[in-house]
Length: 317
Figure 1 (spheres, one colour):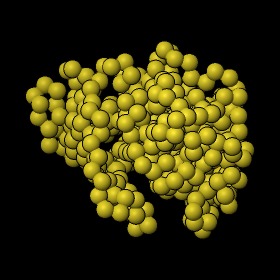
Figure 2 (cartoon, rainbow, N blue to C red):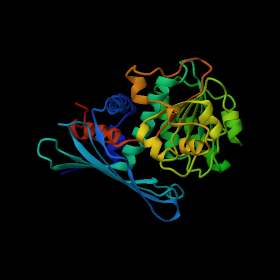
Figure 3 (cartoon, rainbow, N blue to C red):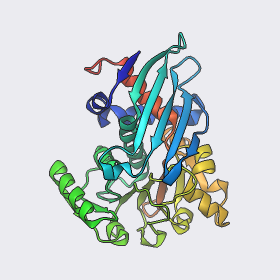
């Protein structure tokens, strides 16, 4: 049984490789060609979560599961908040054949999925990115979304001004691009064309009244029903698109809060992103429309990227 560690995932799973893999997985998922159960989440102490996510890429295709823990305080320790394994099984024999470092898979493919959604939903001329959060996902989102839009500037906000400033300096050196910290969320998003919320905020940090017409928002940080990053107003005002309709109806905190307030119904989820990518449903309908992509992540994305690493040789052949 093979093990693909974090270093190998980081070295080989480039965004050029991952983005098209995730895009295809999204289309297959929304076509009903893949199989998965709703994520099983066990709350632990102090906001920690343990999740089990089984799925299959098709009837005669690889299958497996992700076992993952989420410890938000790991960021302060300088280690990944997501820890775990993706276990792959051979479709011919049913034998487990590979274990892949799930933290690195999750970091890269989550950002790649947001890049796919951004490419489909953001205005083509979008040039200004706002990152709400300065952790691992902020970094990977900046890297991934730069592959689909040519930015002229990036603004970052976080609860610690010092960490936001340090993040901005690192990203500016890496990208050779203006990256500035903002003192408030409202300041960060004031001129943004694309916003990514990648925080562990328990209550909404982004208000709809602050978001300009024509903005695209990737809502990523909350992975279960509970903590929410955007307010009801933004949910209601937006063309709301999910990675998984069933997932958001059961575990999409921002959507569920607006629904419980009686402001929207299930039909407010206009489509899954796979339906937009396949041309079944229109994504952005006008330059002024606000679009929201709610990312929970689904196991098919993990399996597709992990299987590509397992089945391809080091050189990518």
